[in-house]
Image (tube, rainbow, N blue to C red):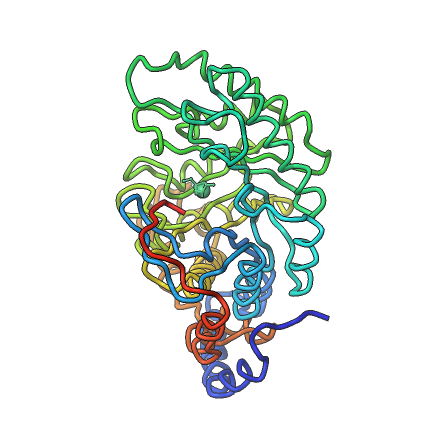
Length: 429
Ligand code: PSV
Ligand code: MN
């Protein structure tokens, strides 16, 4: 039996206000899609099977290096975070896994597993953190971790990753995500080749400890916290790493980790074509690694990414990239942001499923440029909300995510138990 944090009667009462309209909207969209040769139920079933992991760090209020403005009822620890994730999962019915970050979420792994399974949650990729120093550790990562010039520092970073694998084994993760802050701030500060060699050697040791049914994801990022160079700066280096390490190594694409205007959907296509696309950290951005809510700034780009993913999926039924959100909620209730983002990621998937791939291919081969472009536009302009809402409704989730969450008064309730956090701290997380 799965425990529900939000009283199901609240969800039912909210849904009751909207279910007749939803049925009408769904049927009318179904008719229109039928004319395009698309079965709405087939799309809905795919949407219903789609899952996206929620990052444990995402349910806390984020901040910038300038300030952090704590919200009410912030989670005190990973167990509160799991409860917040359970709320998101209950209402969206699309996020039944949590992605942990160690050491932020360090706790007895058996307790973690129990706490999550009570709400029907599992764990997605586990994230290692060697971009900040941890109390009690001898070496500092100020000058790098897995690629550091100092051998003892590299060793400590390797051991941290091995510990993450161990924790992951107990809680049921099947992947390790490695993102490092290593790089340099000045020309001449490091020897690029030597630094990369160190990184690869360290990663080979981590890789050799992976269980057979695990994958390792490496995440590229062009800048920050290192501002002149980063070791894993772009998809090219990321691909090299995955090739060097072996079959269990894949690239992870965080949408915010590219130079402005880079064609991310094309990177997605290239990595997938060569069997090295492992997964995503979804978010949105306008300037850089803004960590804004997925789908909030450039939903068309999110759609284009999914257009590539569905294209691969249509040829390879075993294609299963890991979907995760990675956002910083600085001015919103993180639960609200994460619910809407999960739904926007699902929306892009649903819209991409509407593209008529055969006709698109024919138009491409005939150099009929506008017909090809029009196929994407028609799919993108289709309002698939009734499909998303129906999928949620049928699975016991909320037709209207925001209204139901607010009607539950969850935030006000937890604010009574969780003490207010003092202002004044800053930091990205
Ligand atoms: C780095 O910017 C990153 O995208 C990595 O995924 C981290 O693990 C995450 O953000 C949390 O800070
Ligand atoms: Mn990320």
